[in-house]
Length: 297
Image (cartoon, rainbow, N blue to C red; front, side):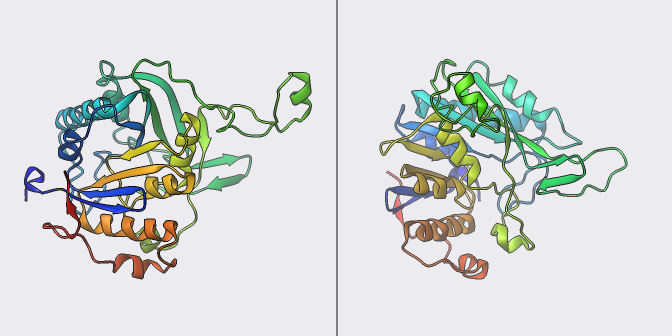
């Protein structure tokens, strides 16, 4: 079925909205200047095995599609909003993230470029999630990009709220800092929790840890009126982070099964369901093509 023919369905959970539908079509119907923060990780176009999306377009086609998506994000993002775009290339396709970001220069200003480090080796010890690569040409790919995009490049950030304590406490008084916090910088070490089975990733090939959208929202700043949008919600990690921070989340995904998993995870975060094993989450009834929620209006 063409994505253009899929009727979007909306479901409310607490203050949040889960929308099963095509991200582009849904965002076209959203009110302009209505979102404070966008945190999303779209398909990377590197052959990831999603359930309902073929992650292997011609590069020009993919970049053109993503540009149209980002134009809609620019329309719904408030003038002082932040768009955090998590994307990665691969060892065989290292240029793709940079080819994409240069095509967005007339839509956004690249205010910050954050490197999300998933694994790092310090001396003889490795920290974080290390995924072996069987290659004689490439070294392991242990990072991804988080491009912080804004309308004009002048959005004030909560650098200390998203920061870290000083290691050398003498710096606090010596440099006249008001609190024991310093800017975290543009390299973020955020490892995955160790998993031993794909079910622990909810059978989704491209999840990210809750700590990543949490760090993005904390850096931008938030309050009880903040609205977060994730147009490629997947299994709902950004919405779980939104719930934990007390902000409103709007999540969109084309895949009925992933929406069902996001629904279950969000219900657990809201205290409406008890944490269960992965089999229980994956057995949640999926939202059908006709939908079991209300039509998007």
